[in-house]
Image (cartoon, rainbow, N blue to C red; front, side, top):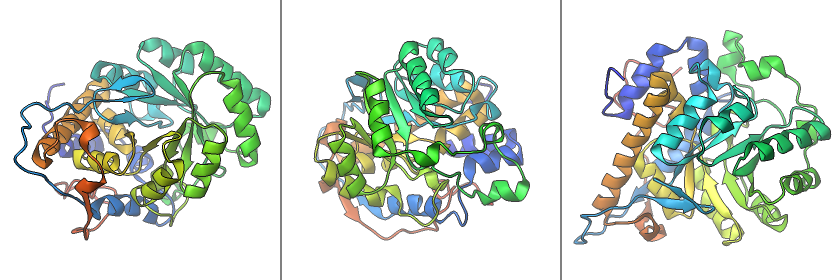
Length: 359
């Protein structure tokens, strides 16, 4: 890139300049009042870190593992649809950036190019995220394609029976390509635990995760059904308004799972300190949604690699300052409740962006 970003602030400012208002609304907005979006940030801001002192932190390892795959940092790139509206390479730009950096990513059913083309673009492990846009045979064929393309796991999104009322998009009259091409969700509305189990079986030995788990009750049911990964998510506030922030949900879900499945989480994770808070409360890794979309808008593949490098620098710096040399050392003893000190909103983690309107 012609400019080497030093902070994520610069990446977001560049992203805003590079995309249309419609695409900006798609990346940044959420449902109805956007209360859920703000609660995601607020839940993170209401947690403080508790530093420990006089420890040798001259060598720091921020890596972890997820289902046997090494992650350079405890983060993965979350599934985002219609990536081709953000960068011409779409999902291939994400795959190449993630492979270069050394983590994992999810490929959405509703992004371009095809799941086979994205899978073939790199040889690093990727997860395929399922949206139901057809009948059982359609879903079976989709799973067979993902298995045949060599994906490392399957991820079923379960919070999308209906498309969220994203009012920024409604006001502008713009919809992403995935919605324009297939607006009805009649089959998604019929998703049940029984059908989920059939999908899991169709995937054979591939790890199976549910994305959109928001209660301890559903996490426990998922474990009973043999789900390998519980993905705590409220879709970044883009589906149901007025639910809790995901970090507020995390402790009860971790307790309900009780080690029987891996737990990952997304929802407003923008900073290294955000990542550490999630790991301390029992998540294995966090998903990066808007964060990676902004990075793609700022500089495509290179922009995403640079954003991940900045996030890694923040994680390592914070680890050293709270007395950690490896990720597995952090636990809830490093966390305390604290009042938030600023207004929570979609850009709340970046206070030096006064020229970007919030709406």
